[in-house]
Length: 239
Image (cartoon, rainbow, N blue to C red; front, side):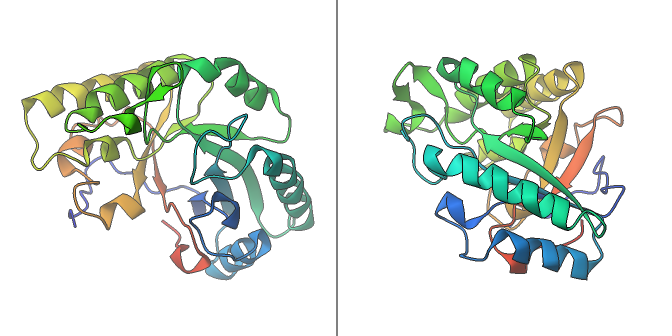
């Protein structure tokens, strides 16, 4: 596990629990949405932000809710937002990969009045329409495509946060000049497009997913938020 750097990492100003998933993503616990909210209140949080993995039309990808579940996700969280409004602020978001072929879909999500935010979580990238990086047998340098997709997504103005940006380097064993160059491009794009960088606590618990070298490059002027990336109630903490 990489030791977390404290350089340029801001704490969340209002005791926010940021980046929470739900059972709908198919790789989280079966606990219900209200259980996360109740635990957040117990911990003393003033805000909890749900960012479950966004579905795509036609359900072409796994490890996320089905497109048919999206209305229920939004309606349920909207009801809970209203129910708990005197106890905690509930924000509703989605974490999604930026894939150019789905630009219109992202805009539809952005225009949805219930959604508070979209965040980029670039787990794979689009090579061309219908072909994706997970189809490749050689992923040694996949960080190059992941970084480009992240930067292109930030430039659209549709996304508020870039989740776990340093996780794109997870297949690398050590930091080098090329990673340094790519990291700088991502950080500069985040600053230029007013996108918040997420320091991800889940990444910090895993090998080669949290890189001190990346965060040591982040200047004070960059906006940073700490995310828990919780997939169960037990993973909730106030960062």
